[in-house]
Length: 356
Image 1: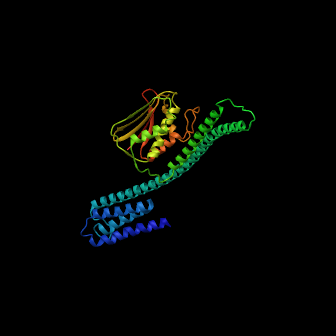
Image 2 (image 1 turned 90 degrees about the horizontal axis):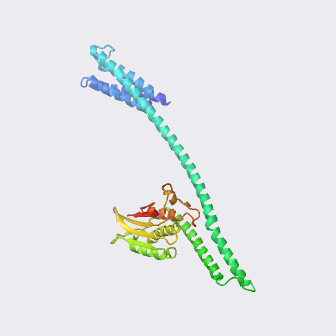
Image 3 (image 1 turned 60 degrees about the vertical axis):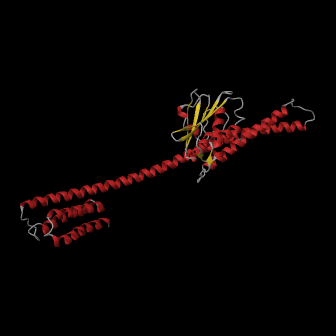
């Protein structure tokens, strides 16, 4: 049906042009008429393809000869040069028609190929999403097994011993053991609470529509975070450098404090006991830079992107859920900034937050 429409349209296009131009043929030259017919062939080729364009070319050549080359209304050509013009017109019309049809066919092929590629990409994306989902599920199971079961086991054991000691007729624990067991319960409860809070914070960061608002003073941010991190930095030399008259940044002070705290906690975990941690804030290229640098073993270049992934832990022997740096990245990106890691001056890890 589409082919029939194409042929009829080719005939109609030539007929309409002929009817429109015959009344004014004394006032227009043959070149103008020929160009009009070539245009009709081009449009036919683009809309309907090669064969209707071929028919339009032949009809246009006939119409040009019969109606527009003297003597009119005959197929006789009076001037020899008009034969050449007619032949050139026919060749041009056929060539234009064929090339346009080929271009149209190639465009359709390209569109089909693009659609196929898009479908393949979507399928690959779905497969990748499934793979990543399974990976995250596995990591989450591992994290939950380690970071919930381990504290619970310790809490259960310490609590059981205290209960048995209370029920015993004679004291079985050495002096000071009660305090040690309570310290275990306290420490493991904090660890469990930190893990749950990290999961909640990560879920909040990934929720749509998060728009941090407010104004954050960098001096206050660092001071408050250092006070909160006093326990994990105990016994270490902490160097703090804050550039004078730093501008405020737009954001949520609680969230940015959480990001900075996680970087300090990470520095404490992955550097030797008693080693120094340097915290600094400065301006660079119109941005505010927060830096936490430790004296650990640094981060290998192959891991510098991975360590910000959820549940990724470079050193499995270090306690942690692998969520801290993922939370840092989520908070910083929610504030329109970026975070990255590089090697510090003493070979340790230097984490850099850039905020506008």
